[in-house]
Structure formats: C-alpha cells, structure tokens
Length: 295
Image 1: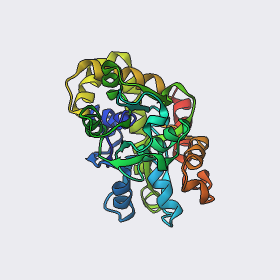
Image 2: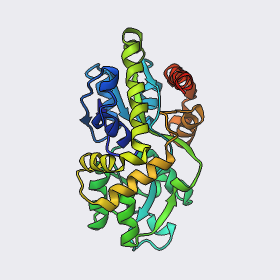
Image 3: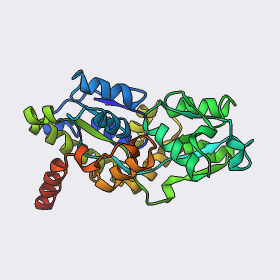
C-alpha cells in the first residue's frame, strides 16, 4: 500500500498499527512514496493493488486515459494546509521570483501551492515551484533559507508558529472541500476482489475510530511518532488533536471535493472532467449502511 507522509494519511498508518485491518482478515504492507505520481504509476502497472495518496495525480492520470482508476474514499476531505513563507516576505508581492517548495510536480502540494499563490493575487508564473519531497525536507529547506515558502500540514505547522513565520493562507480555517488523501484502487481489482476492498474500507473506518477515541490517546501518539519518525510530543499531540477534529469519522469522499480539486487546477479545469466519473462510492454506501445497522 503506497502512502505519502501527511496528516490525513496518518489515519491509514494508525489503522495499520492498531490492528484494524487484521480484524477484517487483511495484512497491509505500507510502502512510503514521496509523491502521488509514482504511486499512481505503480497502481496502473499493477505492482500494487491499492494506494493511499492525494487524488490530484489520480484525476490527471484518469483524464489522460487511465480510466481503470477509482477513488473510493478519503481520509482528508478538507484542506488542512497552510502556506508559509520566510520572515523576509513582508507582502504577497515579495513572493515574485521566489522559490516555493512542493513535494513533487503533479502532487497535491503542487496544486495546493498554486491555489495559495492565486489566492494571494499572483500567478503560478510569478514563483518557481521546486520539488523537494516530504514536508520534513521542505521545512528543513525553508528553515535553512534554501527556499522562500512552502505548504505544510500539522505537525510542521507547530514549528512554523513557534518560529514566528508568516502564514499567508490557512486553508484549515475554511470549509473548502478538497481530497487531501484517501484510498484509490482500480475497477479491475474491484471486479475480482470486491470483498478485499470492502474489508480494507472497514478496517480504515475502524482505524479512524481508534484514532479519534480519547482513551487511545497514548497509543495514537506513539504510532504517530513512528509515522513521522519524531519524538516531539507537542507536535504529535497537536497532530492527533487537529485531525481528530477535522475527520468526519468515516473515510468519506464527496463529489464536491473532487470538483473543487479539478476546478482549482489550471490543467484539469480545461479537460472537461466529471469528478463523479473518477469515483466509486458503493463501498462508502455499504459501510454507512453497516454502521447504521450495527448502531
């Protein structure tokens, strides 16, 4: 299961470490991949059966002919990023000609950085987007003065706040729906392994419940420490607190979040894509029905 490092993806990691998938007869092997593009390529070539990544690269691949891809849920259905710059940037116009770090061209951070730049009254051509990898690497580059701005999720937001760096756009304070990360598979895999996919969704939902349950606070913080390779308790607890609040409790993905992702991207918005065509919501509907009956 390829995954990227990010707050929304931590739900998947906690589900894995808490044994939530094993409860439904699955053993998952998480494989870290820096950006969504290589994960999507692995899925298309059938080196993997599912992935847990941002959906922007999935939509682009689908639009370019990979119609077998299917978004089946989301562990992040609302933007949770902030756009942060060095203290040398005093006004948005100062960003012109400056370097903005993203994880990978075509990844979610690429689209989100472009969206932030446009909200500041600039265009993508006003800045240089530099692919540097996961947010820990992007933070090191910003703190070291090698880039001028980047987009971050918790727990890096704690470091930015402590360093007093200016936050120019805080998407977490808006109700802007956007698929930050979630499970993706192929329609051909669904056709031959439907119950496996359903069991994955059951395990993911159970893991999200585990994450949000206050009595599991210590275990979740420990798992997040493994996920981020960090022992900074303050940052890990901030991450757990933030995502416990923003998660709906089920891996819900909405058509609106897909439409927003498409409309906010310069390339995708010109490709006449219907977001619903990229999705298979049958697993979510079944999951919701099972939960309703169970309760």
